[in-house]
Image (cartoon, rainbow, N blue to C red):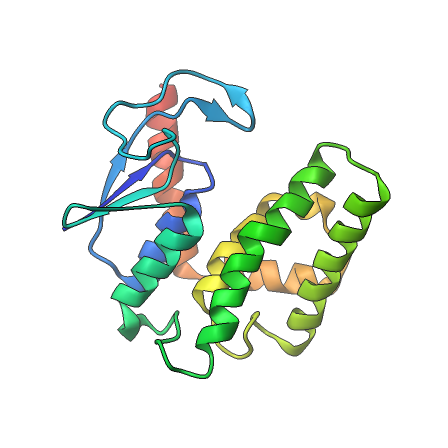
Length: 202
């Protein structure tokens, strides 16, 4: 039994997209969160098992998995037949783990620093290095790991779509994001998330 604790139109929305790509049988439990975009909007949902009251949180047969990269890898490993991962021992496993860890540990901090207006030399250099690394990968593309979509594209692509105005003006990013937006699973996840958000606002 798999249950995802999720709030619509948050960073855990990429896990909803991943679930659609995997064809995974996951119950989605929508819950309230305390903070959105750094602003306190309410109280954390008592039903949410995440120790910080955030999303995503995944329960699998009683085991708790939190943090986007961990949840994404866990689900991808559970559904190897979907072809979005790389099994242990495969030549691509190292690259996949590297992209997932880099997204959380390097890309997102660089983007958030940019969003906050940081212009010190370290922050500027970090952002430029992250953009260069992405463009180098996409130049070889069409996806981050070559010819096939992986969970790394779901995780990183969803972040890039959210912050597109802060990315360099490059057709590499434009084509990549258009390619991801055209995926039926992505469209289904966005529709599903949007419908719930509208219900909550009504």
